[in-house]
Length: 384
Length: 92
Image 1 (tube, rainbow over the protein chains, first blue to last red):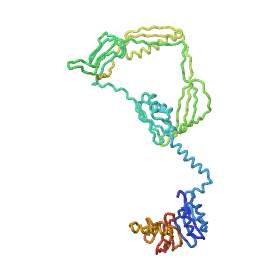
Image 2: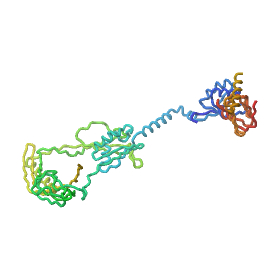
Image 3: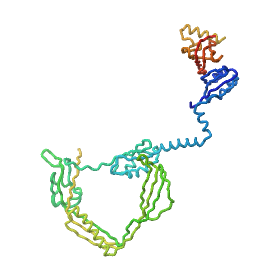
Image 4: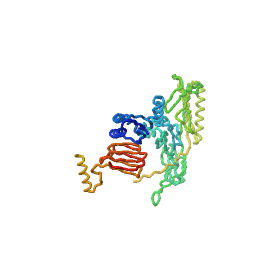
């Protein structure tokens, strides 16, 4: 059927000899039948020309009666080259589009957003319109994990035209269980004022100076049967020193948003971007925000659509203060900082030093505070 | 003459050794299915072709197939297939 067949009528001469000549030339014939003086038979379309010498040798006149098969079906379209070109283009485009990534899906992430992961993966070759064959997966995994600190495992699976990015995020440190052996250590430098060891053995006493990381309450307790491991608990209050510094210059440049914005739309298709704006260099400082408006099919975004980049300009406002205004501003800022500090600690005494420089006022406040410095840390044992 | 002698020797060897006929002597092999179809292996040519009579040449001579609506459904150097309503087979 694909090669095509013809039904031939042979007239006159010696039909038997024609059959013998055909067999001699290795030409297969079938459905041979005789009707009066005519002989009918079928052969492959490609063998028809080779039958001519056989017909001449047998003095037979050959005539094609029927044509069957694909070559004869396509013959009428021979002159319609546009149709053939269209079909070829269709196949080529279909092949091209099928070999590209149409959808990038991110799975398994909670804290790290899809956009963050996509931003990292895009330069590594995972984006709508990318060719999966060009992606070096081991290299991609290494680079992506380096850049995404909260991701501990990542892979990209290609299924048809969909790239599924599977990630596993870093697990947050679990709180220490109440029955787990632990110590209480100092979180900052200070002098111990009071220590209440609820569980465990106190390693410092009131009046002792400690630095950050010093063991305050140990979870290892001596007993007659040997050391016992406990979950150390307690409250350790210490006198600490904190310093706050506020600087207010006489002249300050403050960035403020400007009403001027520029929108730059762009048509994108499988990673190819066609700008829909006149290219012109933009002067001035700005921040840009990009929004995508993709075409959707059955709720899934296709890699075709319009992307709008908004350039939001910023203006720099110069704020000038005289000495009094700068000092007043610095004092206000210091008061705010101290109020924030008082939320966590009790301020006992304070010493404020106001200093005027060429640029502005620098106020340094030194505070003696009472605060809880104990922090529970899991006890790790090393085998000998 | 040489060819005929060789064929005779081959036939004698076949008879003596009880080998199936045609293995050494290149005899034509015909397979008749009822009175509807004949398959001929070793067909050396068509002698006559009509609606009611087909004669084929083989190594052992000409064979005539007589019948009605006779049609050669296949013809190639290896074999020929004749279909129709066979009435007789004659070895000429």
